[in-house]
Length: 254
Image 1 (tube, helix red, strand yellow):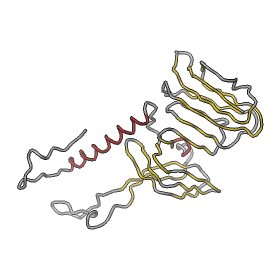
Image 2: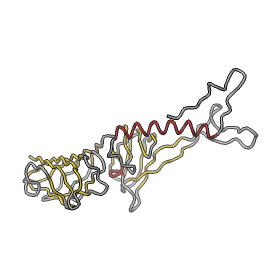
Image 3: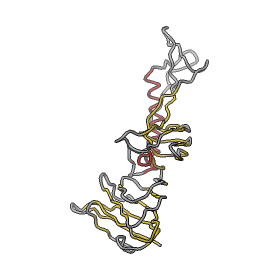
């Protein structure tokens, strides 16, 4: 861990001159500590493109209005505050990092630099902000996940693609109608990653699993022919043998 050594050469009459690099050194010490802690918690399934929700940040959508609750996000090695936001759009959401107004006051900004010049603002506050997603941008429901991978998705599972880049539980709350299917994507898959999926059908029918060539080691029931309305899968990615992607798969329905 980075530490600033000040005890050996300072005294009541000898001070410590702080350089700009010293501030960077101290900030890096915080960043590195937070980053290492979060990566240890998330584990080998860490995906640098994801926003990991530590608390809050729930998107409640109704008739063209997204209300995103306040909370905290871990992303790209840093922990960000995400203030509550209202976004008027029928589109899904994407995100950006906003440098909000600086902290003003006698103890903060503006700061008069040594040697003169115009006082400047240096105490910036960086937050996660959301906005309507243009075509091709990552979508809120795809890029945000809980630290332990739980996502409650207001959509159907039918036609969706499931990847194996992190452990996660996916609850698709909207029922599909009739025979349906979803696909498996093993791009950048991490052996040992487990995905739990739950969904429903509006009428008794079946759910099929498609996608890249894969083999399974266990199977409760046969997913392509089970006539049910509620489905639960537990899929664990085992590895690639040069031809097939191997998974351990259990399926339950009622």
